[in-house]
Length: 98
Image 1 (cartoon, rainbow, N blue to C red):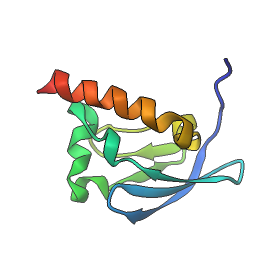
Image 2 (cartoon, rainbow, N blue to C red; image 1 turned 180 degrees about the vertical axis):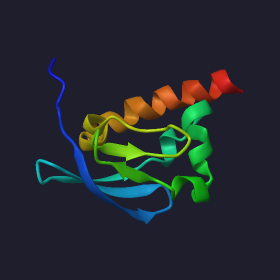
Image 3 (spheres, one colour; image 1 turned 180 degrees about the horizontal axis):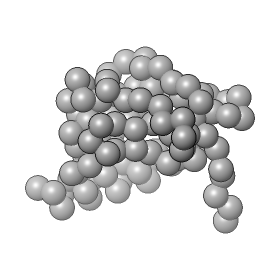
């Protein structure tokens, strides 16, 4: 299995927990992160004020938050394929942090 190398080049917040993410291959993805905002790292992003502090780290080419949360750009790029597995993992994180 190969791991895609891609970079986020731009984004916009399109709604609560929703981002439109643009990549260096000229594609874009609409991403609803609400189902994965669980656990110690991603849980704080459920606070919309915190979520909306998202920024582009152009050095590494991904989205980051001040609390240290970030997402692999390849996961964001392939969100339709990855979202279910990521949400299932996040549900387990919530159980561990409870």
